[in-house]
Image (cartoon, rainbow, N blue to C red):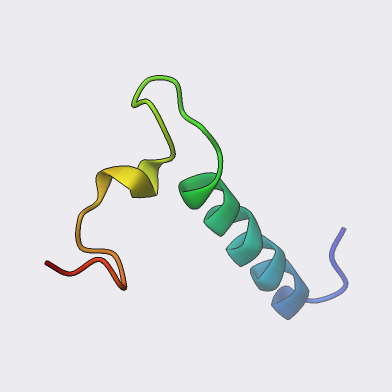
Length: 44
């Protein structure tokens, strides 16, 4: 259980970053963010 809504939002934000940027997804051969070409710092 979270002590506040803010604590829950912070935990979700951290989990979502891990899921999209660091967790390997076998179906797509890497993390989901690796398939997006216009992420911050990747503009071409």
